[in-house]
Every structure is written in structure tokens, then in C-alpha cells.
Image (cartoon, rainbow, N blue to C red; front, side, top):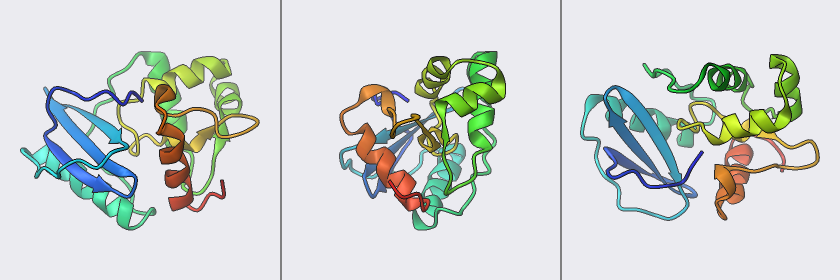
Length: 159
């Protein structure tokens, strides 16, 4: 999950930890978790509007499920990891090693696939933790662990 800003967001919604930027291009959606507050931006298209509404519903109640017409844009391996992550129920976590065992891989490769996830919240890589702690989040962004802790607490995980 990179916290780099795309050239343009099609919507920006406030989040308890900062903001969430939504970009739609050629039918692909990207979500950026932003640690700083940004000026909200109304959705510029139907897809961005759907994503924004569902993100806001999730922030209001962690049990609101995402049901978006999103096509995964990754390697076959990344898609396998993301599918395994998507199966982790709210309020629970699995370790990188547990996911790796499920799909016949290694923990470091799972962590790299988590880092390539451009749909955080929808593909909840914040629910994947290290064997001895939280692990990483947002590819080393200094505010990443603060956001990961907030998301896990929001879903009922004690961190």
C-alpha cells in the first residue's frame, strides 16, 4: 500500500486518521490512505461516488461490507494473496506466515503483496500482522502503523 499521491483524486473523503483519496482510471480504482487531513472533494464520477459512500459507511460502522465492482489489478500471485486477505473476518487478524501457509508461499512474499495492494480497506491488508507484533503497513510510511492500529481498533481488535 503505497501512500504516494496520484496525479488527481476523483474523490477525497475525511477519515478519523486523515483522509482517503479515491482515483478511478480506465475502470480501475485506487485508494490511498492519507495520514493528513485534506480538503474533501465530491466524487467526480459514479464509481468514485460508490467507493466514497461505502468507505464512509465503513467508518460509521466497521461491519458495513464493501460490495464494489472492482477488478483486481495485480499478478496472479498478488491476487491469490489478496483473496486470502479478503477472507479474514472483521475483528480478526492472521499473520503473514499463516497467509503464506494457506497459499503455499513465504511470509516475506505475502508482505510484498500486501504492500502492492492499491485497494486498502476493500482488501483489508491491515488485518495481516507479524508473528511478534503489528508488522508493517503502507510500505514503511511513518504514519502507517498509526493508521493500521486505528483500523484494527475500529474493527474490534485489541492492539
